[in-house]
Amino acid sequence: MATLAPLKAVTRGAKISVIGLASAGGPGDAQAIAKIAPWLAQMGFSAVVGPSCHASAGVLALAGDDALRLSELHGAFADTTVAAILCLRGGYGSGRLLDQIQYDLIRANPKPFIGFSDMTALHIAFNQKADLLTFHGPMAIAHLVTGMTAPTVPMLFGMLAGAYGEGAEIPSAPGSPLTALSPGVATGRLVGGNLSMMAASLGTPYEIDTASAILFIEEVGEEAYRVDRMLNQLRLAGKLGQAAGVLVGQFLPPAGASAQAQSQVVADALRSLGVPVLSGFPSGHDVHMNLTLPLGAVVRLDADRKVVVLEQAIIETASASA
Image (cartoon, rainbow, N blue to C red; front, side):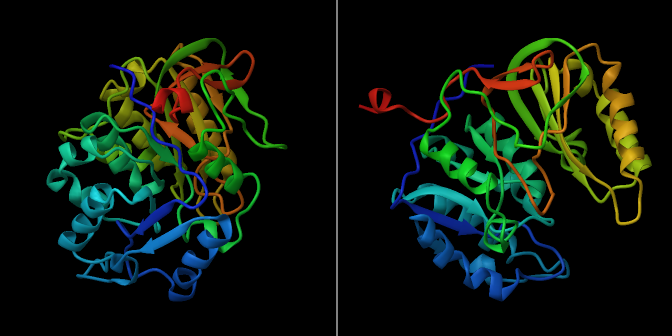
């Protein structure tokens, strides 16, 4: 795969479009949504909060019907005054849009797209079909306006502004050291996200490509046997064996379930791959911390030194854009 092009910096004063692409069971919390524009203004940005953020449609109670969500997605990419697209929340529903998205439009109007969880379906599709580098990171009401601060917030906006250039380490957080499950060093494009969404992509035109890639995985609320089943599905589909290395994010069990059981299942599935594996990167569904990762970017995973390093620029430098 060719290296994906870096994106334009998102600096103070830029306009950020907030759109709802998922949800399930009901619209986002109205009080939280009302905080989005003031919160982004406090951060130094202007906000456009789309109608889908307030919508609820169909028996699944998605963030508006497919036509509304698709229109907002296309409009946010096409609008030259919008510097970045921030997803409202996760839940369910982004995968319903995959075969209707105008990938040529997105390719012609590249800009940072930020989200996680259900947005994994869009990360995969945008990386592979629109050649767009995307950001696995916190969303508007999950978790930015609900109290999540350092290091999540400064890392997100620092990454969008170009604070992490080629050769920079993608830092974990103080008190969150990474653990090497398997030693070694590997370089490849960083791909992945939520385990359930990656498993759901298999057998479709939008399935994840892990060939020679650094695979990032995270999950929430799944029993250990379900995690094992999904990892085995990826294994049988050849997706684990094709990866050059693996970065493991947050795996959060259901309430009352054993976190140790999940950790053991993940370790057992990945140690046998014969590639470097780093575990414990604080990215995923934890309500206290969700650090940003540039999906589609070439990185070096060094399990011996327990670091992940950018091997390409993800934001244009002044000289590159001059």
